[in-house]
Length: 556
Image (cartoon, rainbow, N blue to C red; front, side):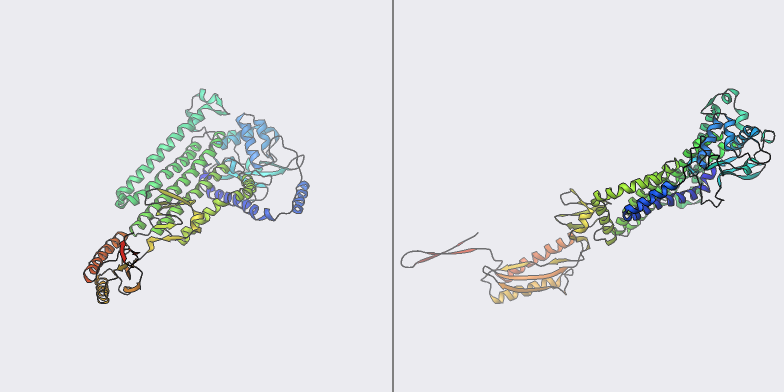
């Protein structure tokens, strides 16, 4: 079982990923192209496969053999357990099969490290990628006389045909008989007879209590070791007292504590001689705790790295980087959650490959109804990659305008000037016309002044000269673009147009500059000319028969 937490875990995880993703990929690409003729051909091939009768002891697969042997020894039916052993060696006969089964159980109880049952192949052909001959399957290791041996199953042919998996003869001959067996374990020496004689689930009650006590001790030992190591690191390396570095240490502490507790549980339960049957029942739980520890470590590392990166990007005012970091953090966490569920279900023995295949069939129909979801996800990727907006930018999208607060995987949130929040799906957001005010490097200043009709040409020249001087003297006005021109003699006023750029990207600052310029221009128009024209209407009224006329003015 400890091998599952050490060398076997990475191989099994990689193998599971390959086995889970390959059928889904094949289904995705091959299923749409499959024709009815191909399906008929596959049905013909499937019908041609040999169909063996069920083995009454469930020995058709390696996992079935291990499960049956565990059930037999749990019931103390060693005669039945002998049928799971290959006793064809010269020294082995069916007569001493029960003794051999009991000796094998004692070896497994005291000096063995076995794979969880869910990791043992459930195929009649066994695991073909384990670098062993096709007829052999490794299910763990054991120590005999200081030498480590492999616990092997071998495939034989049953009396009615078909494969039958048994504990290999080369493993059985290495199992010491009762006379040569190791001495009593620590648990056997310390438990009172009442706890040894009373059994629950085929295991002495004392072993259940011992497993519970070992679990508590393992966690306390792990907690103490990690706490001491953390204190030592803080004492030796003073930089860890800073908040960023301390965040990384916190990310490591709890996951490593859980993983170390699971590893100590496995080692201590083996050293104390807790029943192999009980350890097998707890093996899946131990592996799940180890997987959760790894996933929790990755989860906390993602938080620590992204928080550290986010602080650095805020210091550098890199809003685009912050958007990318937030998006990647959510994506990685979703991936960790999905893969964690898949690995846990696979460890518990569920056929995840078949489940994914069924999901793939339904996913084709589901994808047709989830077009908007896919569109929004693609839109979010476009927003992150193209970066038309960033968190903190003030922009206008369609009829909505506001400050970007969050760019999510489905939608983007804007905080409007009314302090309300507008949520826009990313599919719609990326397809609309986006006006980003945050990228503006200067502001346009182009008022139109209306002079009175009775302003003389000389006064107009004086006003124009004064206005040009005002623009030329201000340090925040772009001199390359500044111009002042009399552009139109309208029906009610003389129009003077100004065009220039205010050299600032701050909105409040440009309002202040604009206000100062307008005040100076008002003074120039009033002192150099006749003032601003008012919108008026002139009404001519014909009075009497002598042709007398009255003229009046009426404001609108």
